[in-house]
Length: 424
Ligand SMILES: Cc1ncc(COP(=O)(O)O)c(C=O)c1O
View 1 (tube, rainbow, N blue to C red):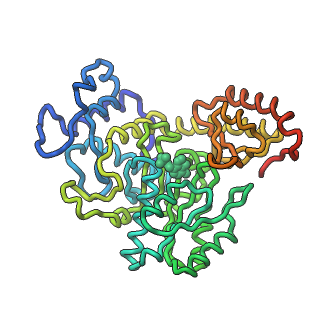
View 2: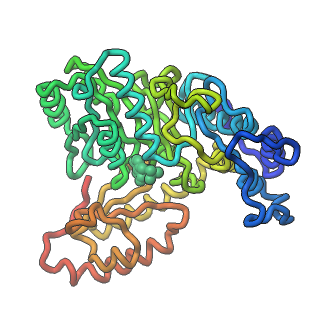
View 3: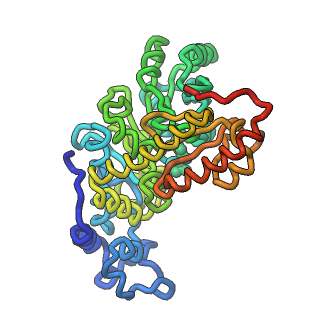
């Protein structure tokens, strides 16, 4: 690891305090022209003694605005202290987790995975338009049917078509035949440029796509493409549980990655992360943003710098070994659950390096799913699957209670159904 290490609370406090000191201090300087200020002191009491021990809460009170992208060009000087911490997060994640070369990536803390995915699609749409003079109806977004709906949202917003590839019902792997067919169909209607979204853990199954498969089939089809990894769920697990994976910047086909710190990292909501190889963010430069110092190249405008500090603190509280231990605890619990489901004969899907277990809905009475807060694949028709996400709060004791109930109900419930079997 080049950057990622563990820091004590005291060490973190010192660094965050120094960063806040470099941000604007409204006691010493009264800027007349910017519509920002610290949190309203009539509402948010700023002299509570516990704040001395709480650098994140002090950051919330100072309320830095991280508008813009701080890994290239200039940024608003009022918040340069905490912007530096955001820069450190982007560099740490790109180099230590996603195998990029030093200083080879840009990125920012987005509002969530949805924004980061839209940012990616926006960059590549503009890239094809600017570099290849592509017409809007020649560009399509390509992804599997297990892909998060934010990708369809991106296609809709950007006025480009969305091409969806089938996956195998049991293995959730992309069907090569379907991929080839969809590419050919798209070419027939004039699509020449593809924006590919490969999943590093799909929302419902935790299944992982092979970016090299997309690259191979699109190369054979002689079309242009750019490839983005959606690691909103898996980005803080999969690179740790399977470091040999090919969904990172060491893979020449990968141009950008989405992460969500507000999922597995348990950061406050509003902490998606977008990382792209240098040279790409510029394709969404909004030249009309004249009053902002620096280049406006992010989908969000104003955004809280406290979110960046929260992510920074989580990463440096655990350090790489602490995080490895935490992920492995969750994977142990997942493995335990899968072992029991197998012994009892319930059909499920689970990727071996991830902490989602998706059970055939035909094996789960609906009231039991509701009692234990399982999530169905659809709310609009009878579900096919229910998922369990083994997070920090999902302890083996609770899984055991669920399994006890499930077994008790199974015999009577499945009297007339076909015998259950494991999904490979
Ligand atoms: C794979 C994947 N991508 C994108 C998203 C969207 O993330 P957010 O809700 O943070 O916008 C999710 C959310 O569940 C997801 O699982």
